Length: 77
Image 1: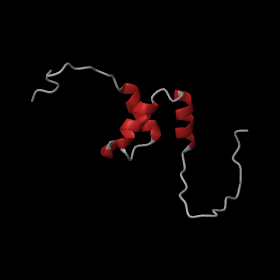
Image 2: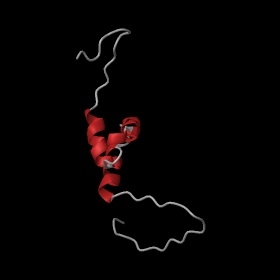
Image 3: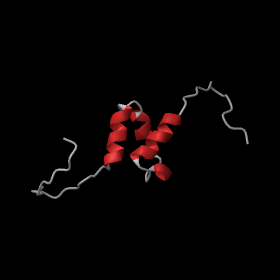
Image 4: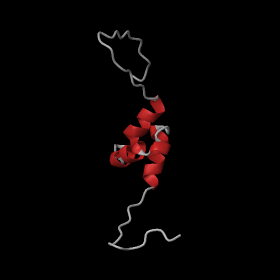
């Protein structure tokens, strides 16, 4: 009950262990996975892949979807 547990884990086959910081885990739970698809998209962007879940979640919360018509100029340089 909100206390760290000590446990032993022994691998029986070769594998990988993933860890998630407590604050990142709590942030995910608090957001109720409302931006899960945006997080997956942001995680796939190479220059953003090193950010924490919390940082990606902040970016995802700022995203706004905008639709464009066929042939419409999106960026004019």
